Length: 352
Ligand code: NQM
Image (tube, rainbow, N blue to C red; front, top):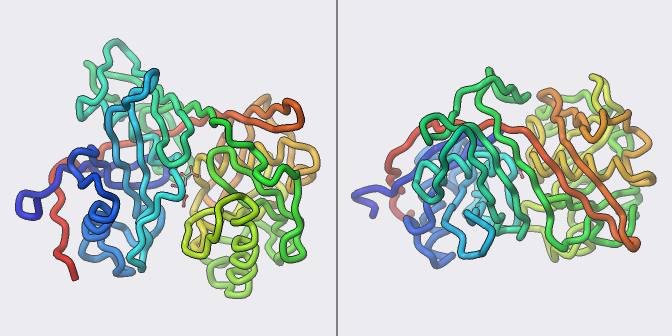
């Protein structure tokens, strides 16, 4: 395999970038697969200089795609976060941005068939059990990557991909409470596809206009955020999260550009240059519920569309929340774009 290379497509999915594989091209056994993925992406070197990774969590991602055996589902999508600077590959979270590329990739690899003007691909997110429907335009049966859709954080425009998500039986509020007290701060622990901890930015001396670099330079802030994250993990049913990439911690501030709320997101140590798809869906669900942290900061949504402001602009998250028998559930629809950047074979570095 090392001599002939491994079939791999490099794609931008939303505001992230990752290596996409057909599952049968990688070892099925997780330890061998992860060892190979580390060598492909270049971790644990912090510069990922000998691999495909871009030395940032948003460009150190892998999507593994296969036909689904489940009825009503076309494709299984397993996401792996390859930690920069550590020999760690995590399947503890999914990624809504890479999800945008999964439908087009599956079509390119012949894992699904489509005809007509649009494809609609039902995707099971293996990491969480959630199901998404991805809808995108076709030209001559191939994904149409060009188009007029713009998303903040990506230059220019591209073909729109609509992602409709329904979460399984997982409760929206994992603790069953709207707020918890963590390290002296009121927090809302919520999971609308991504487990997040919502906090008020002003309690941390943050006004919400700071750049990711400004926030990353504050070691006191990093320590406070991590203390809260470690407390939130077990409460959210995630166990000890010291070595996990979830939950994410999101500082909320008043909106400044016509959106609903401002955000700065810790993923979990670097600060996101925009915001994840499912993070935005989780923030929107939180601020939509009276009494949740951030609901009092939030401006008015335009119908079901919540403009979630972030360092690179705004993310329009279409979110619906409902309470039945005291339990909250939510669903979301997001517009993303994706693009095939490179298709070929990747040559993993040898073991160190
Ligand atoms: O929340 C980054 C990203 C993400 C996650 C991260 C994402 C989502 O922006 O749906 O897409 O989780 O660290 O790629």
